[in-house]
Amino acid sequence: MYVPESKKLIFVLNLSLLLLPISLLLSNSISEILISIIIFIFFLNITKKNLLEIINNKTIILLLILTFYLIINYLLNFDKNPSITRSLLFIRFPLYVIALSYFLNSSLINNRNIYYFWGVVIFFTCLDLQLQSFTGQNIFGYEYIREGGILNQSGEFDGGIKRLGGFMNSELKIAYLINNFFVISLGALAYYKKNNYHLIMIFLFTCVTFYSVYLTGERANFLCLIVFIVSFFLVSNVKKYFLLIIFVLIILLNFNNFELKKNHLIERMIFKNAKAIINILNTNTEKNKHFLYKEDRYFSHYSTAWEIFKNYPIFGVGLKNFRIYCQNPIYNKNVPISLKNKNCTTHPHNLYFEILSELGILGSLIFFSFFGYFFYICIKKSYRQKHIFLFGNTIFLMTYFVPFLPRGSFFTNWNAMIFWTLFAVTFHLLNTKKVDS
Image (cartoon, rainbow, N blue to C red; front, side, top):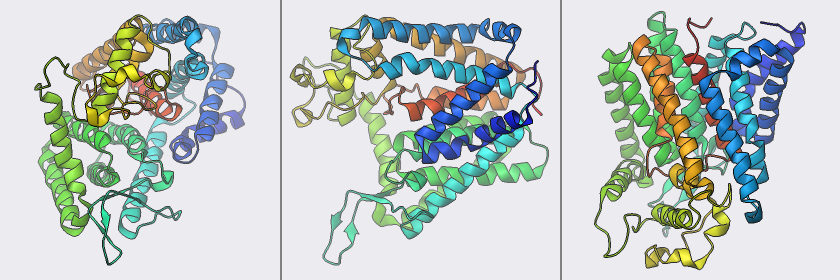
């Protein structure tokens, strides 16, 4: 492997990786710059022989095929004016995956230190959220957002919940970032575990993160975190502490419900999630109406996306075009009366319906075949080698594919930068034969 002579270049690479989660908290533009720097240094460092070896990997080949299809889809839907940046510039994410996994497998960076530093960032981000919940402001002075409730005569709110944005202020999506980097850092702690000190850190880190994500009020991300924690601890080498972890987490939830019962947070995060699952399983719909016809705003988006897909089944309508086509009044006929004219939004809020409506059946086959293959080989290796780090990352990536779970757009830059960071780390672990230094 060729190592660049410039120590400054290596310093910039390490600094870019260390600052990545901080930049995602504060600025999309800075995050894009850091990712571009990582890709740029990769091309300065890589040799032709190493590049050919990387491209010869089946996962990378399939990822490049998906990227090529996005370009073709843009050209085929050119008259519909799809997003050129999301279609053509998607190539930066496969390049980012290749570059990051390459550096993680090199001697230019210390993987463990990077994973642990990311964990420290997430830990303090969580503490900041708890400060915002308790005092009403985080360390930057950003206030929580009151959602629901009625202002009573004494000037206080009855009902409603506190929605926390933390360092992201009014953008209520911080739990997604916390979850992804938590998964990486926790996996590293368990993977490199040497003594009881690591066990204490795993226990503390899990409890703080779980409670903080719960406080944000982000239901989908909270559900995904629960799935990950249960799966991870049941198969890890610290599974004997699983019941203790569950007991402490239940105590934390009950403490919040007792001390802050006016928030109704326990109702939103636990009972409403349960009701949402029951609603999904409910097959009783009105006569001559399909399964997606439900009194639920997310299902109104799903139904609209499904109708768009039926009208443009092969290639869809192009990336970022759901927001345009959903405005057509014809898509009101398959949503309940109470949700008519409310079924149109920026994206369908679900991965499957987003891919179907915007990329069509051909794009869906390529997209889901790629991830299905990747998850299969990851689970297979993690099972054979008892690789808890790889297993945890894979399980959490798979939660993004839970059917009917409300999600942000897969192709939004912020979401994509976080998702492909976790994917790159997972891809690196998949292709590593020895423990990282």
